[in-house]
Amino acid sequence: MSELGQTYLVLGNPWRTIETCTQALDIIHEVGDRREAAHILTSLGVAYAMLGKTKDALNLFEQAHAIFRLLGHREGEARCSWHYGLALVSRGEDKQALPLLRVTVAYEQKIGHAKATEHAALLARLEAGEGLPVGHAVPLAQRALGDDADKSTENGVPP
Image (cartoon, rainbow, N blue to C red; front, side):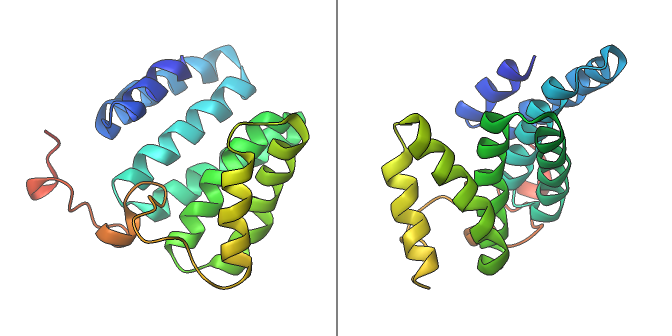
């Protein structure tokens, strides 16, 4: 179920992600699949981050992260940690973000993930106090939009 929400994210439609994942989350809670719930919460967090609703995103990432850790699901924890960390960076909370980003980089390096080198370089920039490169999506627009300001649409109405 989380795959459909992720597909909408890739297509750049966070509103459909939110709609789809919210419905899926209700079903998943009935079934009791905590791992799938954590994946859906992560997708919801990314969607809210794309809309500049960082506080909502952070809440969702925190919930998902706790579930992944409880379940010992390292891949989910690493993926969620990256998004969680970037959301913190978008708020200027680099110090709190670094441990989360390190979790992701360590996991990616261990498994030979394709983005391990890129993510390690971004982490090194943050650790050196250089911030992220200009134009880097954090997680996909918060710096430009500002915290909790949905300026990506007219009057907050999705296209």
